[in-house]
Image (cartoon, rainbow, N blue to C red; front, side, top):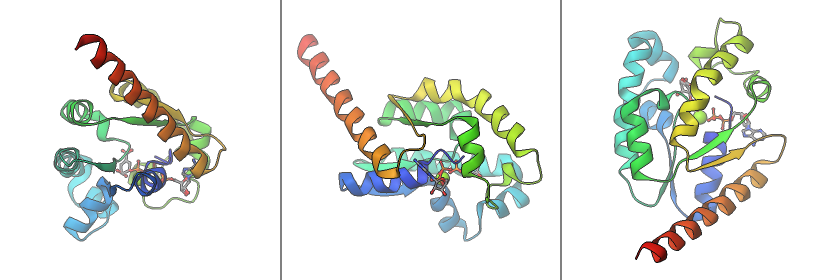
Length: 172
Ligand SMILES: Nc1ncnc2c1ncn2[C@@H]1O[C@H](COP(=O)(O)OP(=O)(O)O)[C@@H](O)[C@H]1O
Ligand SMILES: O=C(O)C1=C[C@@H](OP(=O)(O)O)[C@@H](O)[C@H](O)C1
Ligand SMILES: [Mg+2]
C-alpha cells in the first residue's frame, strides 16, 4: 500500500498505449460500494474472494496493464496466475516511504485504527518475499518522480524482452 501501483500503473498503461485496470476499482465498480465497505460487511476474507475473481479475469486479458491491491500476493492461486499469465513488476519501497505516502489515507481498511508504522513494517516483512517470488522485475520507488519510475519500468521491461529473445534464439 502506497508503493504506487495505481499511480504508476495508470501512467505506464498510457505510455504503452494499453488499457489500464486497477483490481480495487474493478471491484468497487462491480459492487457499487467502497473497498472499506466490503471489509466492513464481509471481512477481509470476503474481500479476498472478490479480489481473486478480479485477478483471474484481469490477468486473462491480453495487452493490458493491471494494478493489483497490495495483498493480492497472499493467495497462492493469485501468485500462480500472476506468474504464468504476464510480466510482474514489483514496485518496492521502504517501510518509511510507504508510511509517508499513506499518511493521509482513509480508504485502506488495514491501515485504520492501528499503529500504522508497525502495521506497514509487519505487512512488508510478510509480503516482500512473496512479491519477490512473483516478480519478473523489481523497481525501487523512492523520491523520484512518477514519470522517472515509469521510464525505469519501461527500460527494465525492454531488457526482459531482450533476454527472453536471446534465450529463444539459443534454445530454438
Ligand atoms: N513514485 C512515487 N513517488 C512519489 N509519490 C508517489 C509515487 N507513487 C505514488 N505516490 C503517491 O503515493 C500515494 C499512494 O500511491 P498509490 O498509487 O495509491 O499506491 P498503491 O496503489 O500501491 O497503494 C499517492 O498519493 C501517490 O501520488
Ligand atoms: O495491502 C492490502 O492488503 C490492501 C491494499 C489495497 O490496495 P493498494 O495496495 O492499492 O493500496 C486494497 O486492495 C485493500 O485495502 C487491501
Ligand atoms: Mg492501489
